[in-house]
Length: 158
Image 1: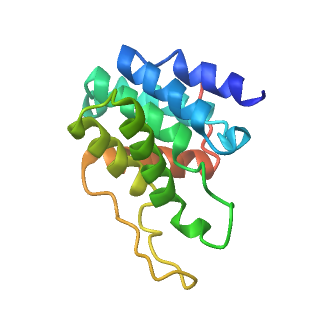
Image 2: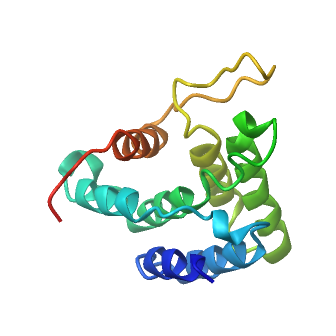
């Protein structure tokens, strides 16, 4: 499958053994794995920013950020409720963890919040009564910033 390239590029960057297994399990369980978007640019940007003092997150936090990129938009454009895709993706990851229990409560809660708040300030829609959470901490803001910059076509040297 085409998603295997995307999967392996991100998978190979994850350091924590449990997180690698969790990532693989979630990719295999994804309802439409071909929708795992190419997140390579976002991952490269994040890795570049991780070298800056202000973004020196622990290795585990870095891994969870990279995992979030792969699943943030998994349910986008699936139906009329696609505005709510961050919550659908976060719930999907939580359900996967209930099945395999590789992440502890703090880790899955951290990942849930990264994914559910990734839309940033664009957290309301006329077509939905749901109000998505806005990024509150530096990790959530980092995920939103990376996705926003890549979506807007930021160019950077590799």
